[in-house]
Amino acid sequence: ELAEVADKLAETVETLKDSYRAAERLQASFLPPLEKIVTGAALYYRPLQEVGGDFYTFTLNTFSKRALFAVGDCTGHGIPGAILSGILVSNLVTIFSSNPGFRPHTILSKILFTLRDIFSSENGTRSFAGGEAIVGIADFEANKVFIACAKRPIWVYSPVEGLKEFDGGKESINARTPLDYNFPHYELDLTEDYTLYLFTDGITDVLSPAGKRIGRKAFHDFLISHDIVQLPPEEQKQKIIDWLEKWRGTAPLNDDMTLMILPFKVLRLYGERTFSKLYPS
Figure: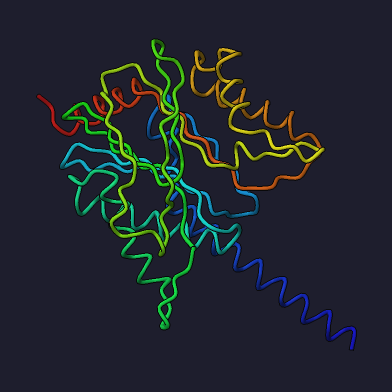
């Protein structure tokens, strides 16, 4: 009997491994190598398990000369989180590709209809499954960056104004979000010397061995008081990782973590290089 139980357990473990490998392949297919695509940007992505509910994306529409970028945090971890993040990313990219003129808040509103179709039951109840997200579109022809937030704030740094937080609003993207909800949205000049910080709450929810959460204020103060914002993005990323690891110490990870550092100057260079090749004068 023990041998039979051991065999069934081994089969279960192998099935779980197969599921994780499949989920890893799925997630890898929609998580682009941002730092290779946009030289000078920085990305830190660390799922709690082999796969996770955090996501990011960057995709270009050459016809409209616009690029979509996003960071988000879906309900759950592991395989369920990875599946949900795949649903959200695929919808983001599909809606943007089909309607490149849409602003980010319109794309978020369109996704609500998809989530209602997926997560509404026959008796009319709806699941809270969904996610928080920051979605941006860089318009290289108009020299504008449009941003919309679904319950995730975005930080914007400039040498003149310092590090400011743009409100993320009260609603995430899920089947219960009102279809007429107006996601907070912002417009910035791509010609300005801004740097965007897009991050999930896994960054600010890191726990110390004593169980203390690091918090958003401490993260903000760390970036400013140590002049981290003055460094190149890759150096910023490493400083932030070291700081988080020092705080965490021996405590286990407690959430997926994603951080994207995106200076406008590297976005402009990306646009210039891309469209000088595609549309030479």
